[in-house]
Image (cartoon, rainbow, N blue to C red; front, top):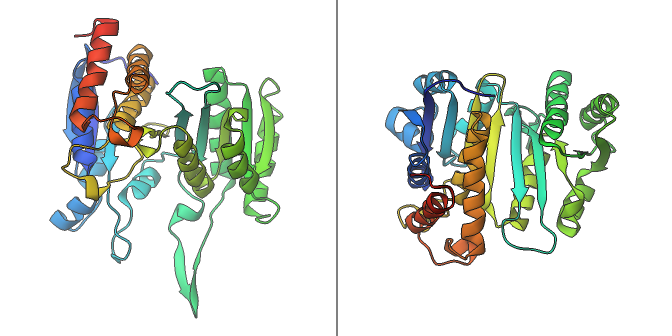
Length: 340
């Protein structure tokens, strides 16, 4: 997507916990680029629920629909609040953000760098939210549709082609989940046959989880269903610096939402110690979506340099505060690229 407007409209959803302070650092970073922003703020999460009884107000949804892009912080989802539904999961469904894209890249210096992308179906599967009680237990329905399978697998092949990537790995459990994952696998193989220029393999989820730890360099683009992708992408984050370095793009037909995926981490709220780099990498993904690849590259390079110099927060072995880590990245961008 490329936006051809002088002023870019960004809906900002700061959320709960460390979300607001992390997003504030992201907005500081965005302010150094020679672009004009219009920020429209929306309520979301537990704070919104406590304020007006709704974790995802209709006004917030409207603001997301009309934005060029959405920047999302984090929300707290309490376990046993009966009328509380995860607002980010619901927002993905309402806006049709069917593709979750999680790049996993090791910024530190290693003999073999990790550079893979997990493409996850984002609107159905076990996260469809369809549950009911049974006598002596409960049931959650795993919804897998032909339409959603085609959309996410075709997205993965297009993504690979656009980014010059050579291989797609489809992750499934079709030997056990024969109807649902069997459908996913069947559609994946049919689509792969139409793209002979891209290598294709399919593997079981348990094998994928093992090999992601043992030999992550063998993966390029992985495509899978909702919950499998959620788990694998956090596993991959553990190989590339942790959740403080993990960013995601949620892509739909008309909307893109970009987020650091570390959650609200309320125990770190207000302490100025949370890692802002995942937010910066989410902004880089947003810049890519907006057709600002040059500036996205500047952010990624500056984050890499800051990590390699040890100018980072405690979770990465550094000593910097949240605000000092932000200042480090901004200083690198200004010195390397003469951005003021």
